[in-house]
Length: 120
Image 1 (cartoon, rainbow, N blue to C red):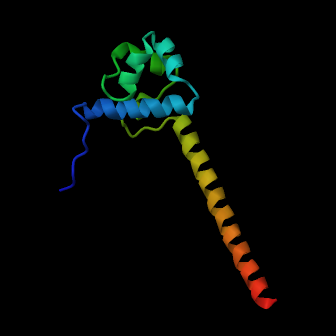
Image 2: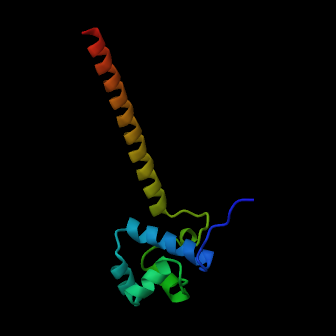
């Protein structure tokens, strides 16, 4: 059986939700201070939510859902994917394929340079 992750006494559901909320706000370009203001809480309370120490309470879920258009299924580890998340995945795949192509071209160029040096 595999080793269980160490959550340092934190509820694993809170850790997952905090991590996913952190990803969400980073994706939309929102700072922790802006999130704190939107939720009407101190930045320290936001930090506790994002690091999994505290849970996201009902009123905050409502703000996330209705005012920030946040997919709560994503936040809580559900299988549903928001349009924003799908766009982010598409962007990552696009960037990754460009990186792989670029590396392939560079490898081919190095090979051709080696061939040219050998011919001379």
